Structures are given as structure tokens and as C-alpha cells.
Image (tube, rainbow over all chains, first blue to last red; front, side, top):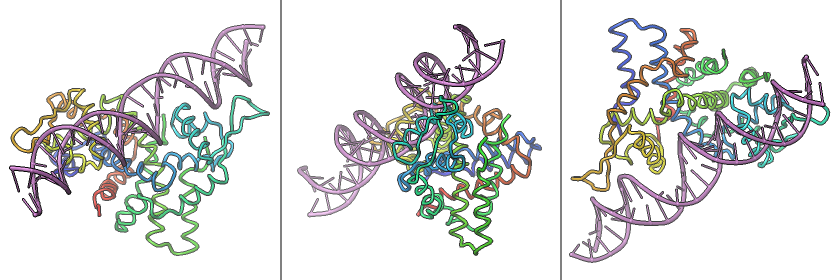
Length: 167
Length: 167
DNA sequence: GACAATTAGTTAGGTGAGCGAATGATCCGC
DNA sequence: GCGGATCATTCGCTCACCTAACTAATTGTC
């Protein structure tokens, strides 16, 4: 195993704090530098979850979003999910091919627009995903102590805030 | 904007708690279901950081790891970073092509093995990355309140623990 | 010493996830 | 009626992962 890991950064920032008061910018920078590799590695495992669940994490997220807003347009959903339309078209292609989502061109309103719906098969997948305790993330979270789980839960809102408070 | 969002899940799990005591498994499942979409969306933005920084998040992480363990072998680094050797070879190819990392076949020891080193240019990139307050993640963290930033910082260890306590 | 098993790294081919530029169809304001 | 804007799509690209198969070198066993 390689020595020094995230702890090396922690030590550096602690040492820096001992020498000079930090500005909020310094704190944010230090947190960013420690958080980034962790998020990247977690994401790798989340990609692996796809094989366990039958749908990718992104697909699951999109199913949830469409479930909550039936008939949503593709451009609207792309904006909400913070991806470009071509990217979302690709995801919807795959979900449609898997029979989990249906496209319906708006016949009476704006005929450029299509409405997205989760199919019954897609609803089943969603229900299954919500209960899946054995998926990687849930399994790993179960290994944490109550205090650690609480710390992760407490961070969800602030992490969401990183995304939500757009300019 | 689409209504409902992470708050919908929160409400569901709160309602469930009112009706029956939850097991640690239920808590972990609820946290997983709320955390997963947030991590996926954050990762999207982290990918976008690459254009700001000149190296991808993964490349930056690998530079840091090689910097901390000069001469590390590729198989060893792959194990540590929890990727397969072919994946790591691809990353090292790109880093080498960019002049940030050098490969050196072990001439006196095991001639199958190569040692990885960060080049001077790579060290400069690392130094620049550590100071880059304007990168997306650091910028966004600066918009959080002190309490929110503290909550994110407190979650780093538990999030790392999701990765580190392997079987 | 010969050889099978193992290890280190690489190549090939694949999927998933994102992007920008360009496109066609449709809508809207003038 | 027409130009500009919008909606969704296509094309081509990079990045990030994987498995299977491969070559070269090392190690362990007989």
C-alpha cells in the first residue's frame, strides 16, 4: 500500500493554519483538495454499481426525475439535470431501448417538443432500486458507525448546495 | 424547474420513521438513495473542471499519488487507486504524452516492472492545482456558510471510509 | 536445469458519460 | 412572409472505466 494519502494533505493544511490565520478561501481550497480525490474514487465504485442494479447511476437518477415530473420536455430535463441536450438524448435513447422510458411528441401543443414518461417496467426498476440494500453504496454505508453515517447525512444538503445555488 | 427533488426522498424516509423504527440498514439505504444523485451531479461538474485546470480530476489524483510514492510500480498503483492495470496504463499514457509523468523500466531489479515518476512539469502542475481557488469545487465551497463547509469537511473521513475498509 | 505457474505491463475492443458544432423542424414576433 | 429562436437530434470527439488476451520476465516446484 502506498504511504501518505489524504492524511498528507490534512497535515499540510493543519501546519498552514498553525502559521497564519486562514481565510474562508483557504479553508474552501483545502477542503476541495481533500474532497476531490474522495469523490472521484467513490464515483468509480458507483459506476460499478450499474452491473449490480441493471441500470447505471445516471439512468436511475433520470428515472427518478422523470417519475417526479411526468411529461417533462427533454430540454427542460437537461437544464434541470445540468447536462447538455445531446448528452440527455443519449441517455434517453438507452433508457427507451431498455423499455424503461417512453418518448411522446407533443401533438397538440409545440410539435417540436416531446414529453418523457417512465414506463411500467421503469417504475418497477425504480421501486427495486429504492429497496436495494445490497448495492455498493448502501452496503458500504452500513459499515459506518452511527456517528459517521450522521456526518455523511449532514453533508448531503451542503453538497447539494454546491449544485443548486447557481448564479 | 422540476418540483420535488431530494426533498421528496427526505419526506418519504421521515414518514417511514414515524411509522416504524428503522434499522441501521434502513438508515443506510435512505442515505444512499439521497446521496447517490448528488454525488453523480457533483461528478459531472468535476469533469468540467478539467478544462479549467488542464488536467482531469483523475490525472490530478494520480499525479498526487505518484508524487507521494516516487518509483511506484504500475500494478501497485492500480491496486491502490482501485482501478485495473489496463485502465491505469491508459491514464499513464496520457500523462506521459503530456509530459507530466515518466516511466522507467526497472533495469537492475524485476525487469518486468516500471517505476513511475512525476516530471518537473508535472510537479509544477501539481503546485498550481493546489493553489487553484477558482476551480469549480473550491469556488462552490466558498459559497457555503461556515457551518455548511464544516459539515462537508466532517464528511470527508467517513466518505473515505466507504473506500478504505475493504474486506 | 526444465517447466509450469505467476506476475507486470500492454493491446484490443467494448460500454458509459460527457461535450460542441451543425442540422432539420417548428414556433414566434415583427 | 421571414428571420430569429427553440426543441430535439446527429455527428464526431474525449475521458473513464472494464474484460480478454497477449508478451515478457520472474518464481516455485520437481
